[in-house]
Length: 110
Length: 114
Image (cartoon, each protein chain N blue to C red):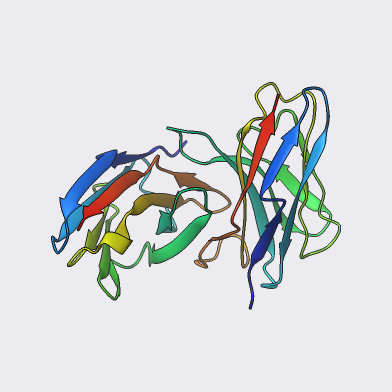
């Protein structure tokens, strides 16, 4: 069974700083890896999806990478803003199922 | 606008009562999913459905039931057999299972059972 880990569990940075969130998975046989954002009491909003054949995906200030051989994905956030404060989750798709990490809670301090 | 609608947002029930959570999508997605989210834990899959009138158990299906009579609807019933039903429930959908299409989520239903 796929296990997904996200470290750190919480992160606090000053506004304007660049940061990296980490996601590791145990089974490299994934179709894709998806990054989500979750605001308190809300559902998950999809940020980026990286297919297994890709190494990177970019959307605005966000850049996600995928290294299947090492079982790792990173989400890079450039020039962080207070509005980026949320919990970020990653999920590996093995076909019929998605396996989620427990998330990294990000606080960007003005 | 297309999306996934979960209702109600908050639900309160007494122990021993069954309760049904609604999930409707107008994205024309084939697959629909129910997840449960508890503090400090990742999302756990309860049930999923790939086509109408067919569904499969996820990792924590005990005490739950679902139906998929229409493509756009996938209601979840939390039965009295579920030992710890208080949680945040999330419905999701996507195009054909096995493809590289992203998973989309509704805004969730918070169920409290006392």
